[in-house]
Image (cartoon, rainbow, N blue to C red; front, side, top):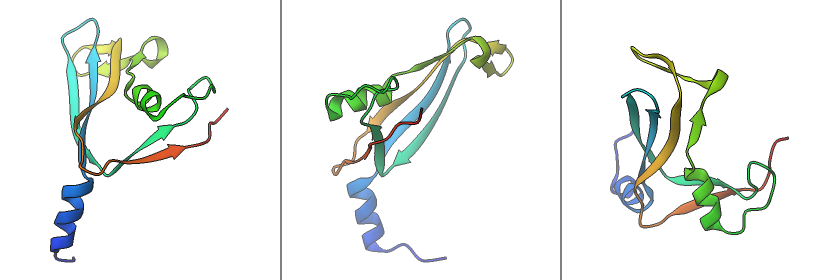
Length: 108
């Protein structure tokens, strides 16, 4: 295994941000969170309906928009069984150099 160098720390200090994946049940008291680091965020240029998003800010808002897990897509909460839930991401800290990859495609 390679020994970490000073440049590794510099890259982390400049480019690493932190985000939190979360799932919150809507009808019972259950939450699940997982903290992760990121070097870049991959943002859509087109919305989920195929319409162009007007700006990087709109793309970031869509990226952070929570999804409701309902119907056949209910979340299996430990000890509570299948539950309606909200799943999403929260930005915890941004890096000094924020790198965005724009995804210029959409699957139909």
